[in-house]
Amino acid sequence: MINIEEQRSNLSQNCEEMLNLCKIQVENAYETFIAFDTDLAEDVIIKETRINALDLKIEKDTDQFIALYNPVATDLRFALALLKINYNLERIG
Image (cartoon, rainbow, N blue to C red):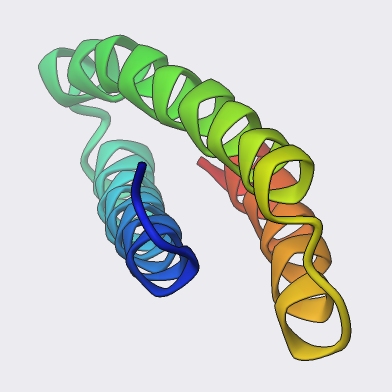
């Protein structure tokens, strides 16, 4: 079984990946809007499924983290903040 610190690290890495994907999506959407580039628009739509999949993975892993480790104090705040951040990033991306 993975210890709590490794699990926190994995969750942080997944959230950082989600942030980077959303940032790229917003930049591409802006470029699409400015240049009227339909190919890039299709690419943005296709890559949105990757963000949705990562959202579900982060949600599942965070739920599992809470269930398995019964976090308190800092770890619980970390898990709850991660869920809120993930929710908003998915909406952006």
